[in-house]
Amino acid sequence: MTKALLAFAAAMFAACDERGGLAHAGEALGRRLAGTWDVRLELTDAPLRRAPRMASVRGSMAFLESRWLAGRSDYGTYDIDFRPFGFDPRDAGETPTATASAANDSLAISLGRADGVAVIMRGRMVGDSIVGSWRMSRGRAGGSGGHFVMRRATRS
Image 1 (spheres, one colour):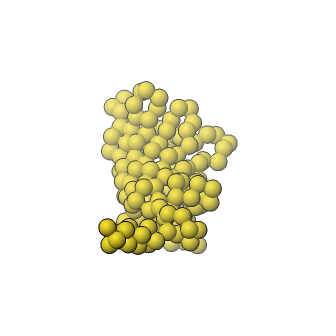
Image 2: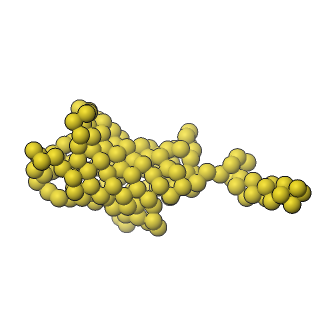
Image 3: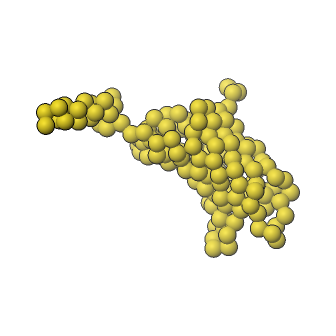
């Protein structure tokens, strides 16, 4: 019993962060997500009635680590033109918003909605890259989707 209690106490101590609380895997990922990213999205699933003009688009995202919701989400913005795919989740005249939530090395990024259009990106962080799939939904009408790659931006 004493060995088990010592092992448990050691594990709890190892899991504590500098604030004395339990460290969350999401917090570490949040710190790794903060910064600017180059993004490439490929369209692999599109409605038949809308022929996309391009098979891929490029853009950028930037995230700040949330101090208010540490370990749960990061907030940011993006500059990606989805119009070649036949939709646009940005509100005209508004700053495009992105919210990321993390669990272990997985994350979900939600891009701001406009006119009922929502884009959700789900991926895994591997080194300085994030790879995964994305899905656009437009109300109950379904949507489009594909794969994406995000790489930490090298420009300063």
